[in-house]
Length: 397
Image 1 (cartoon, rainbow, N blue to C red):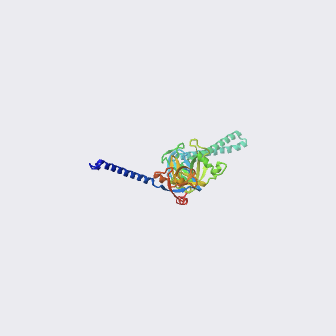
Image 2 (image 1 turned 120 degrees about the vertical axis):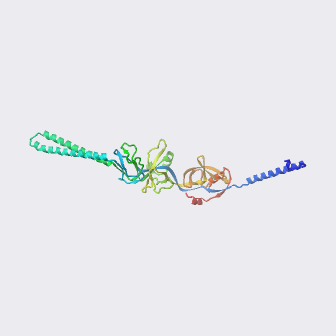
């Protein structure tokens, strides 16, 4: 420090300079501390918790299937001559789908017809013999043994005719089986085989699957806890009666849009799955326009009406270790963090069963306060009250 003074400067002058410098530094530090302590509390939007009649929704993942998914299988062996439809095509009941080579079965039919003709000729011959012997027996020209023998031959010929007629009918049916038609209206699934492929009755895989989609069934499951809560929501002595009292349900598509038709819930299984601990349901939806297809996915939304639901804006909450919290404003406008129990939600709000009560004040924008470093219990704020009505108009339930 001595380099700032002349060589002949007095030591007392140096001591005074050091003292003044230290005093100035202390003054600056005190000024900074006072400036920090004088900073006012954060001004934050605050809303009063309210309760009101509301409708909450429970959503369950669902897979969609047609009312009938019909496997199309060949009933005769042979080579595919023609495939008349393409994958995904809509078909009507009775429409031709596949053609199996019919030549072997046509030959069998021709052979059966020939055998039938021969059997009828034998029957006619046997009938002639019977008619010829009857008067001779009546006139005692010959014994009745010959007539009985002729009658037996006639009966055998008659049986042969019936057997040959059955063979003709069987051969005709086999020829018909070479034309494979749609058993119902629906959509064609994947066609793994191509023209010229050998098909057999014993094949593991079907030729295709026709999905009948006039009605669509959405399959979903509930856990045991959700099931026990669910069954207490509707009147009825038995669970089947409770199911009948359920209001129609909605289907949320993969695009998050709501399917325009309502569905009706039915019980799909009578017991819980031992592996998953869940029970399966299905909801049936009309599908006259063919919008839904087998294999689609979505979510079943079940409405639940609440007389006095405590609502909390979702933007006023934050999650920590799988729990949901809010910043409440206590006495002296100091922050108190509280966990809440969510029983349902809408697009913008949580329905709370425990944690806060109507009339309590909470910080509205917890997400923005987290981005600014968050709030701490005991920290004072300057509340800026927001009207619940104005919030509900801006962000309805």
